[in-house]
Length: 432
Image 1: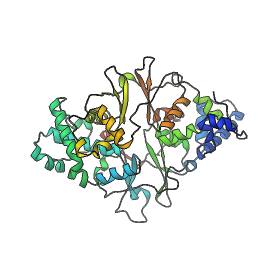
Image 2: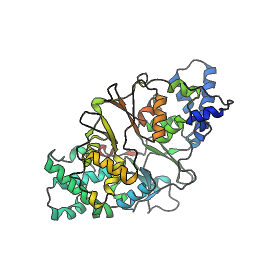
Image 3: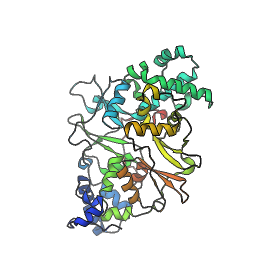
Image 4: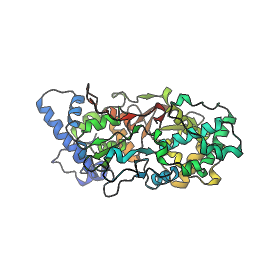
């Protein structure tokens, strides 16, 4: 077990070499951890509080203005609302990000933030929208001569996913969808449709934003219980975004707090002690390595999940495909765009070879691991999820960044009040 740090303690050189975390102990995130430590210690002096109550009080005492800027030293990446889907995918890929705020090009210079932005576009949103289009065209049973025309005319109504007729689970229908999706990258649908035209795929309108005066507790609850992947922090006076806080940024902050009393008391709990994994084996959506890669994305679209494991014949996971990996399909060369025959296994191999993609390998843990172990592993690998395996090496559950944050704090009764007033949730089919 790592020794507990104190503010006065200087980490010796040997310890720095032995622990990469210690080497970053005075990062902005670690400084935040020390602020939590000070509040934690003062609460100890005031009387008996449960660990959960103390953590809630600590995080409710620090404003999100203190959170390190995720784009410090660089400019916030925005996507103009008149960008095409192809341009949006290119912007996200070049900047190695999975989402970006969409700036309303028609808004005046002095517009408030709620008029300046129309939402946040994600690889996930683009993928789901295109998959809906592909399935709608395939269901129309068109011939090859009609394909190009159909791709430019089929519209996706703003209704629940159940209202869209699913294709029959046959080789013929799978092949039709593969043909349609393969034609998308060169189609007008992908190259002329504007980002603003798929605003129905955004979960919130324009997005759920924090003010700098909101607290860490609010931020942590929104990123966990309320399933937000990222939270813009807006400058009300300027009408601009001053920061974007993601689930991954929070987990990185926690990784920098290793050795502090408050973190160790919570972080040394095993997964089983904290009730993890929340998602059991029976609920995990998976795909075999010899099945079509496109099927993985269709499964994610149908089930509303952001990633699925790829398993071999014995059921052991050999890789993982995330919804954001659709970029490899959309940017594939003509020669690699036969989605009828491209298997999940080959898709992973091609992505690794063409882009050095490491994210498709799978990381695992056991129920006896501590939450601290999991945080350090997720942060080091820059992953969104980790799979729990049993003693035989078979899948036994799934833990996401959201699951970890959810175990850190709880929502007090009536905490949010009218916080959500004016924020419009979109239809259920928009959730990924």
